[in-house]
Amino acid sequence: MKQDAESPIVTLNLPRAELRLSRNAMGRVEVYDRWRRRVVALTPEEWVRQHFVSMMVDCKGYPAGRIANEMSIKLNGMSRRCDTVVFDDARHPRMIVEYKAPSVRITQAVFDQIARYAMVLRPEYLAVSNGMCHYCCRIDNNNGTYEFLPDFPDYSSII
Image (tube, rainbow, N blue to C red; front, side):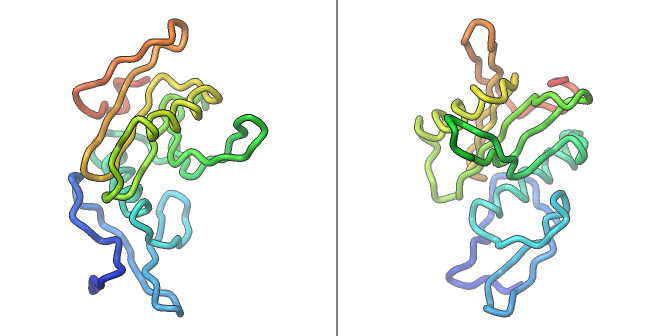
């Protein structure tokens, strides 16, 4: 697939993912999402999601069947979508991952957004990535504290 000026395709600070790209009738780039089993628009954020989830499954041992992309939740009566939620065997949320485009800086506002989702799902882990920088923290929901991890954890270490 040839890169053009409007393409979200940039080199990320993640392992290379094998993606099936195509162009729709309007000439826009799309990607087959193997986890949602459908074709989606290839936005810069989607480019990051596809690479990050590939890293989780292919390098970090996350079972594909325990990952939900674009999961809807209710927050203060409004419908919101978590970019990625990882579940344990009992279907309890263990981690929420929020993605931003590579050009978007990871700021406090990004952490505030994912923290709001965490108030609903109460996972033990939160992660944020723009494909260049990645942050993961472990939350103690009982004490309202958190600690940043030095690296993104393997699935076996979050269960």
